[in-house]
Image (cartoon, rainbow, N blue to C red; front, top):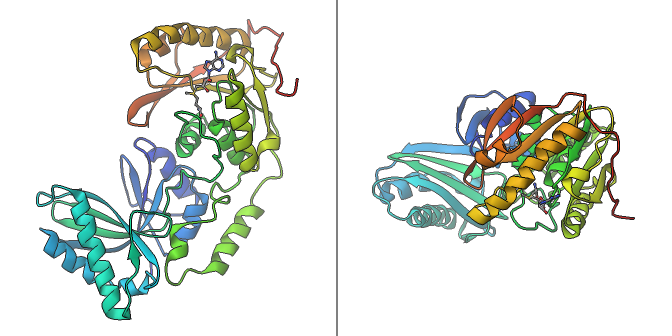
Length: 390
Ligand SMILES: C[S@@+](CC[C@H](N)C(=O)[O-])C[C@H]1O[C@@H](n2cnc3c(N)ncnc32)[C@H](O)[C@@H]1O
């Protein structure tokens, strides 16, 4: 039976998530700043979990009801036939988003909700599932705003940003779903080169490789919330995965280059890319961003420099941002340049006029993806970049 499916995402990513949902053939019923409502069956959630690059969680609606206080919450939750979804010998975690005047601590709502679920299963099956905070098995999501409650099965379990390839995260890596959205925002589709100086742990280059191959971003993950629900159809999951694999391209027809000044970062990025199965598609090198190879043929150059929370750090970064402007002008003619930053004052140091400024949020900080048209002209032909193997 078709039900409402709420797909959550990081703040600001909705336009890209919407595009993905429509491309997969699902309708868009409504949208908020951090989620899109569509509709489908529980079977549809398998494909959504496997294919969405920018979504965080795929929530399947079970029931909506009015609840003024926790007793009404308990009663409403108990009415749902949990014994049809959650194995009595399994494990369940309740997550929530609560904005109700009778609740000061949302953990209290979680406990009441969990109690109703396990009490009901105990009564119907004679045994109750274990419960706790781990999201690697069955997960139930409670959304309670004023006196309106919605109960969902969180079919993702762990958020979809955890693709499973990040073996070495480094400090402050970009979330995989944000990287995927930035690539969508750039319009890059594999038809030009993808150059990523300052690659850090390699998220942008890895997500670009996956997108360029049209490889489903969920193929690497072996665990999802839906796998821990009663009635999970393993054969359907295998079919959905096989179909996704058939739609993959054999390779990308362009160069993907990722560099960083720190050898340790490049090593981490290389290992992450290998874990993602795209190590062979990315040319890694240790070098200053300004020495990153920019091959003829055009494409995109995308940088995510630090944007410094401390004043001293910001001063230091001014020169880096200025240098990025020079690099764009002198070496990246014929490309589209992108700078992702949370500090617009620093971005001004680039000294180029941004054609587009696309808003995003990164760990709660308002950021922009700035787009620069870099015309062919004063580009210097000589490029130098040390390869890791040299
Ligand atoms: C904010 S992090 C990038 C994070 C990356 N997007 C990720 O997903 O991990 C900035 C990176 O720029 C690198 N970096 C800083 N100054 C550099 C320079 N002059 N040349 C090249 N890389 C530099 C740092 O080593 C760091 O890995």
